[in-house]
Length: 150
Image (cartoon, rainbow, N blue to C red; front, side):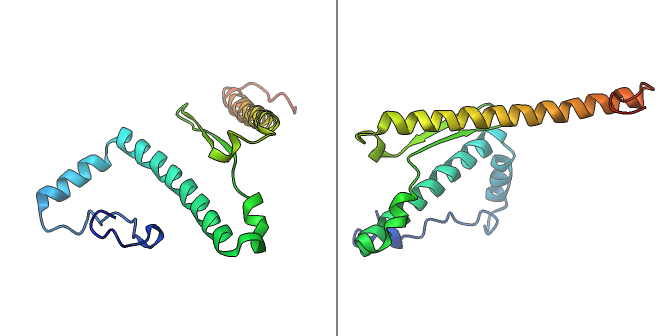
């Protein structure tokens, strides 16, 4: 956009340059150092997730603008509210702008909250089950009998 103001936004190549195709060994070392930084990689991953969500939304909007009512399904498939709970403890909430003034906003957010709570309980149950299996196998390895068999 800055180099060519006449270009359309969806025509812009959004890929970053390849850091391994450099003529300077110093630049290569700098790229390798930054790729070893866990904080940088975590931020890069989060940016990638946000970009993917925005790209998906933009594609759906472009489809609806060009086809108007011919493709109503893409309108219904837009994500209104999304919560990502990452293993490192970060919680990312995303809300579509359309939900702010939606007449059923409270109902939609309540349903979303119930879904997030159910998902958390499902994952917690799965992790407790796996931890129980690991603890039982450790006890079994130490000579104790397993609780489900003789």
